[in-house]
Length: 247
Ligand SMILES: Cc1cc2nc3c(=O)[nH]c(=O)nc-3n(C[C@H](O)[C@H](O)[C@H](O)COP(=O)(O)OP(=O)(O)OC[C@H]3O[C@@H](n4cnc5c(N)ncnc54)[C@H](O)[C@@H]3O)c2cc1C
Image (cartoon, rainbow, N blue to C red):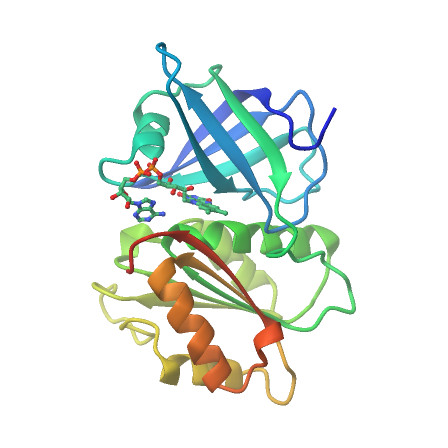
């Protein structure tokens, strides 16, 4: 069977991550190991035969065999995300194909350079797969996640990320609240900008980190420019754009 053939996955569990984000664990009859950062395509077919297809990054690490976790942000008026939010229950079948993508991936080698992960909103999903993979492998590759969200209630995977930051001194979680920060917040509270990125890059000292930036198109483009301005070489910056809007 081709790695990109469509298959019918069964929804094993659904988790409400934030008010507008749900994670779906799908059991796959033809599971193949993926690289952290890859995605699946998901296809919905209406009764009349109309089809809609979208890509969703894999949130789970390749060590989680037989199933994948997809984390979907509900976009207002979104055709596919709206259906996934309201029309899908445990036990339902969904048509998917993957894993897809060979560029925005982190293979998880012990010799890999330090990791600089920058995510906006659901752009954190493939970055989470990388962090989970790193953790499952027991690697201590220095890693920093700069995660930009609008409000405190929008921090996807918050408990898991905070636990990881507490238990693993080689991982740093930097939350950035662009609209509303929690009371007493002393961290970043503005859109990601060049000064913020320069500060984050300086945490790596003389080392050249491998950067992964993912999220809305506008955010990813400004992060890629800011990281280059902060001294990273273009080939050390990998980007994945999720959608048309800025945040
Ligand atoms: C490689 C890849 C991986 C992706 N992984 C994820 C993921 O892990 N989780 C996730 O939630 N999404 C992910 N996306 C985005 C996803 O594929 C869809 O674009 C998104 O779910 C919206 O689809 P929809 O059918 O609900 O909205 P549509 O009906 O296509 O669009 C509705 C409205 O929302 C706007 N819109 C479309 N996409 C976005 C977006 N991403 N952000 C803001 N506005 C948008 C449209 O311009 C339109 O105005 C990924 C995209 C790519 C290319």
